[in-house]
Image (cartoon, rainbow, N blue to C red):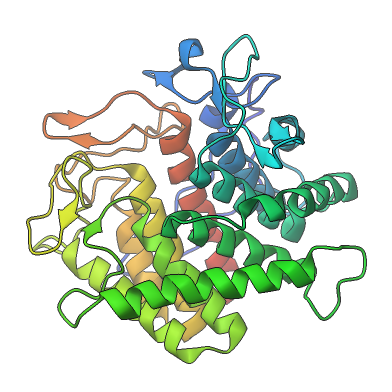
Length: 374
């Protein structure tokens, strides 16, 4: 698929300390998409057919398509939103009540049920789609899938899977609040599940954390800021100020432990993570983490009403454009993609879907926030 090159999103001018936001460029995600969905991995900037597709990346691509539809000004996007949603629908295993995850290039499913994280991310994307879709067919199919899949995500044990589900439910309830559930059967049970999972994440923070380790686990690993974002957003909706305060406190701590001496974002690497009482791994640094930080900081800005959190989101975004430990841009202006991470030797030159969508979602969310402040 090819991009027309047309982009209706105008550059917003941020505070004087930052460069103007880059234009939204969907070319690489389009080049990674065929009639089935978005490919999972890349060989340099080309799709890697050997690794096929996964629901995580098609869920992320669907969120990007929803955001771009809202940002475009005319309600359109070249991103293949119908294709990504159709992939999610095809992935749903009716017998198991859960989604499959990995699909080979020849369209063979490689498993009957995907990981809890993949279930949670899919619920997240469906909630965002219900909240943002302008096309009633897309919105209603997403609603149907959300309703059918909700019972299958009630058995999560991992905190991150719960956080993804909370964020999806929060988005869903923007369209169908529990007190006005006309047209849907899921709002009431969604509220119950949101409340339970938000409380469990908050309890992990309050029971496990201390003043010098305000975290919910003994190891800080991946998608960390999603845990903060979940309790911030849910706490705000639930009227639980203590949840919001815990999320903001832990997010502030994440920013501090990932702040280099000169102020740039220095992401916790996945080659050892950050153990309690130990040393933070310097590499490998993943774009997924920068996106999680951007989104959580913007959620904090919305809740707190202060642009200081938005400034932190901009600082985290600069990781993609060279504000990182190696002063190497991860975003590729030539392709519109994002490299797969920072290694000690430099940037991983492959531009897979997860990384490219992490960049794309980050810049879209910053445009959305600035538009809301205009």
